[in-house]
Amino acid sequence: MIPLLHDFGGATVLVFGGGPVGARKARRFAREARVVVVSPTFADADFGDAAFVRAAPGPDDVPAWLDSADPALVVAATDDEGVNDAVAAAARERGILVNRADRAGERDPGSVVVPATVREDPVVVAVATGGQAPALSRYLREDFEERLAGAGEMATLLAELRSELEARDVPPERRRELVTEVVNSSAVWTALRTGTAKSQQVIADVLADERATGGEPT
Image (tube, rainbow, N blue to C red):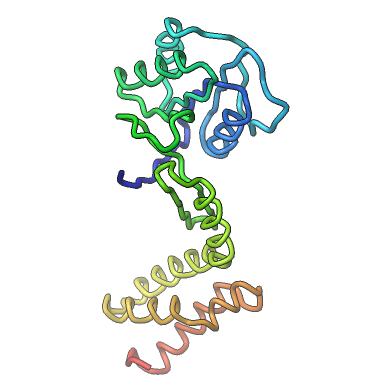
């Protein structure tokens, strides 16, 4: 399996199944996509901003649901294997991404795995074990949550710094040196994590040092 990131902005995700698993999948995608959950009943759980459709489609009804919703991704999360099989088959026939929530640890041709994710926007780290060890995915996710503190601020800082250096016609090789120095600086990481320095202050310091040294490596 090859990990990829997919932009679901403006797309529809269709979830079959209103239990706890369907709710978890809906929450995951509702932060970015339009999510529709189809189920005869809905668990007493948080579905994010997903829309509910109270229905109990059988296997023969599934293709029409996909044609109507035109989803970018469909999730099979019901407790009926026949319905889940139909969802997966209809999705593959239409070239639609499908996630089978009932096939953890199994390879299902054409299916995608939704990994454990840690976000420090715009930084995203995903962890997957191929469905073999969900507990390990959770453990690693929690570890990354601690390690990524400040990563979002660092990513924003580096993007702004690169733009400033380009605007000042700093040679590409020197730009790379300066960006590398900043990202490897424990002092900058500490300042971002503790809030003792803002990105603009760090950028100003780098530019001031660059002017003072005349572009020579420090």
